[in-house]
Each structure stands twice: as C-alpha cells, then as structure tokens.
Image 1 (tube, rainbow, N blue to C red):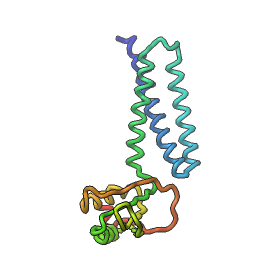
Image 2: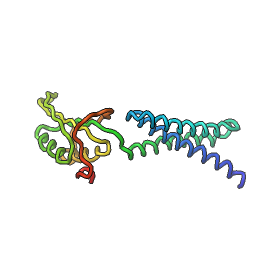
Image 3: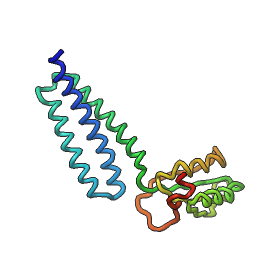
Image 4: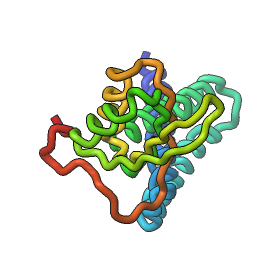
Length: 182
C-alpha cells in the first residue's frame, strides 16, 4: 500500500496542477478581452509555470504510465469547466443587448427597463414584417439575468441578441443599491 501513496500523490499533483493552470488560462483570456494586459501577463506567468511543473511530472520516467496521461487530460478538462464557472461568477465587463419587441409591447418594455435603471435607446426601422423598433441596451454582465428576466416576463418569445461590448464610454447604468442589485 505504501508504494501507491507516492504514485497517487503524483497523479493528484498532475490533476490539480492542470485544473489550476487551465482555470488561470480561462481567466487570462478574459483579462485580455477586457484589455487588462498587465494582469493577463501576470496570470500567464503563473499559468505557464504551473503547466511546466505538471508536464514535467507527466514526462518524468517516460509516457509508459497511462494514469499520468488520464490525470493530465482530466485536469485539463476540469480546469476548463472550473475556469468558465469562475469567469461566469466574476461577470466582468459589459454586454450589448438588442431587443426586437412586438410593436404593441415596445412602450411598456422601454418603461420597464428604464424603471429598473437600464439605459434604453430605441431606433425605428423597417423589418421583414413592417415597421419595428429596435431597443439597444448596454449593461454590465452581472445585470444580464435581470434584463433577460424583464424580457421573459413581458414576452417569453421575444427576439433579442446579446453580444460582448469590449469598450464603452458614458451611458446610463443602474446605480449601486438600485432595485437592480436586489
């Protein structure tokens, strides 16, 4: 039994090192997308250092032990999952929400979104089915579920699009402590 303890410890080291370095990889990419280059560089340094240690452990003594490869691959997959979970919880940055409501719902939706502190810009346009109004809402990522809840409560079949907003300047956003945060 004692001969398995160092092996088990090695497998666990490989697995958890990969979980950590892949989680850091996801966060590093997020920081790059948010134009936080220095933080991304620091995270990248840590990430690669951990990666090299894990890879060294896998390659030590050759690739004859399939459990090392399984631990490495399992840590990679788990690290991606955990990294995306962390990224979702951090909810850094801004999103652009474009909403295409039915004409009769447009005034009510604009009022409801504005009551909740969202800035709404409406643009009249011509769609395939006639005149429409498109609503543009810039929002913090952490406020997306609140905005989607408003849309869903008004019309569960409403058409909308959400995209990443890399750089914004100005605008109207819910204040801290507003109803949006509750």
